[in-house]
Image 1: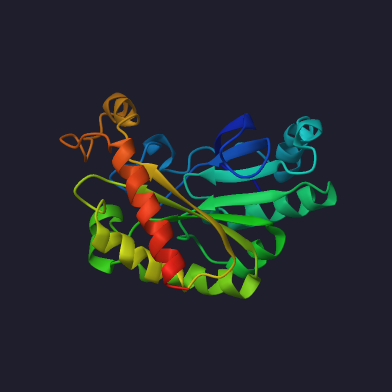
Image 2 (image 1 turned 120 degrees about the vertical axis):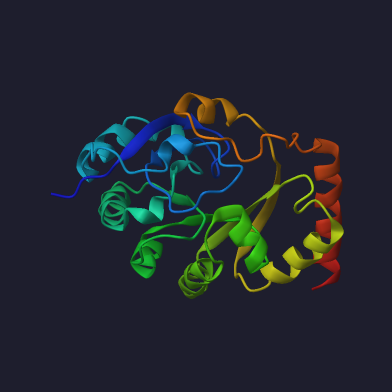
Amino acid sequence: MIKGSINSIESLGLVDGPGIRTVVFLNGCSLRCKYCHNPEMWQKKDFNITPKELVEKIKRFKPYYKSTGGVTFSGGEPLLQPEFLIETARLLKKENINIAIDTAGVGNGDYSEILKLVDLVILDIKHTDNNKYKILTGKNIDLVENFISELNKSNKKVWIRQVIIPDFNDNIDYIESLVKYLKKIKNIERVDFLPYHRLGREKYISLKIPYPYEEKKDMDKNKCNELYQIFLEKQKSSK
């Protein structure tokens, strides 16, 4: 029997895709992003729910979805539980429920099968340069390239999320590289810049894990907004 390892379910999410959404946080992630705010989800723990059981929980919130809402699988990294994700998505499709995944694109394969069942991909961009990507996540960027290749074949809608980190990618050079990098990804509907914050630090302390960005301050929101406007201008001029 297929079972998934999930950390929690957020019943009425408003920022993880269009409309009102149920957000399912799956355990397990192979990246160790220095700004991660969910370190408690790095490891797969108890496999505590079947696809059918999860769908029964989700169905209770279906009246809130209306025409735009649905379910978003987040984490952790949902792509690390492909069998569970595929079977759950198949059951959700029978209920005519919209499906999004919030992912860094580093999973265990079966991407084409997963993408057949998904309506929206929210793709987290870590960095455009392999060396900086590895410094930030501990992995190589080519793992993401494999997912992007399958994503482009799927022709699915894409939202991009980019965390802006002080003294790391908060500069014009990076913005220009991001504009160039995103040209390789099809069907991008929107791009969001998220200012780095230290809100996850307390979780590291409780888990007795050193916080990688102990000396780093929160990203200035005004500067983040300024960089976003520059991004939009450069993106427009590059078309």
